[in-house]
Image (tube, rainbow over all chains, first blue to last red; front, side, top):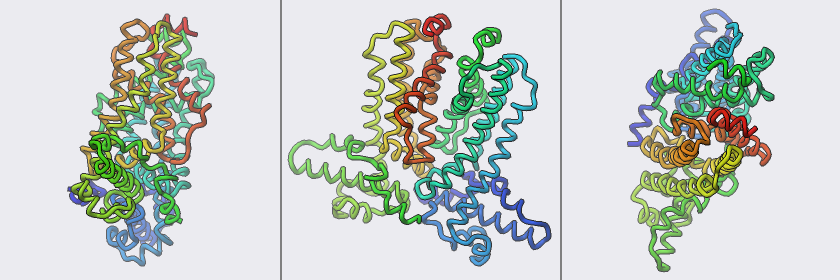
Length: 249
Length: 249
């Protein structure tokens, strides 16, 4: 029974890193057909390694296996990555590059919409909470998160780099937006950083924790919407100025 | 560098399962010196296996290694556990037995204290939040949680059993206590289960998530107290009846 699960744990049906999550490094390659081929091979190697690291653990994955899974020669692997550790580092740091793009997309709703009332703030935060839940529940985001947590004792510096560039960076962007709402009198919070963290975990913690234990389970759209709106309800009960919260009801 | 980390990942300095967490099964052994020896060996095997599963993964741990780590013969291992899968199952299910004891201790504050005012409820919930944070941040609880999450795709039924008997069971007990406060007019919540979940994650999610990425990091007592009191502040802002919350300020 265990082997069945392992054999099925491929990128496709287990939601390992998709090409999108690895494009950060590919962008660095200059133009030309030779460079394009090299970038494609690099992506294939990183994808294969991510699949194997997640399935077998970093320790039990060899560069030979990575080459076979990526359908390239071992020489090609070593031309791109000095060793297995470098390969792992490039995967994690490539993901953190991409996290910034995801964060920018999620938090764009915070900046572009004009927000002048409690009801508008509620709508904007609910939209953010929904995007945030959808973002962290993407199979490749969950898979990479699990890989980094699994290897956190072996690579504490990479766990820290990921944490600071992905979840902590998202919190910074949200805190900065909340600061804007505080200045316009729409929120009352002494510590925007803590408020942002509470907001994030109110929205994310329930589905993210379940997804760790039940990798194939996702909330339905209706459940996702309820998680988002309940998170915002609680957040605003705590952080809206008293009069605004009453007016919004 | 990787091997150094691995070599140091022993039960003692990495916070693997301690004997306390494995006592559930030992209790089943009847008295007598022979039975006592057998129970001790059983505990030693479960402890050794937990250490190895966490360090190397379930897949790459052999019964031979378990026997060597536990300093018993391979025959002794097989006398106690039919195979590696049975050993893993007994570890996880032994932990869930113990979770009930931890939950009972944590939530005892909810039942024993007479709570008649908003200020008293606030004190009780803050006490609960502190105990809850301390409970989930115990090294052996975190270590077992990581093991179960790491093997969730291989053993989905065990991940479910753990989730239902440990975190979900804690939420049930809290929801039941909240129901009591709702009936006495100290809280206003339509869905005590959701309120309990929000309470739990408000208190736990921040330190628990950090502990996943930074296994050796714990909040200081002052940070822990702030997390607890902020969680209760937000929870009561959302769930205290309006008048009670005003009176409590």
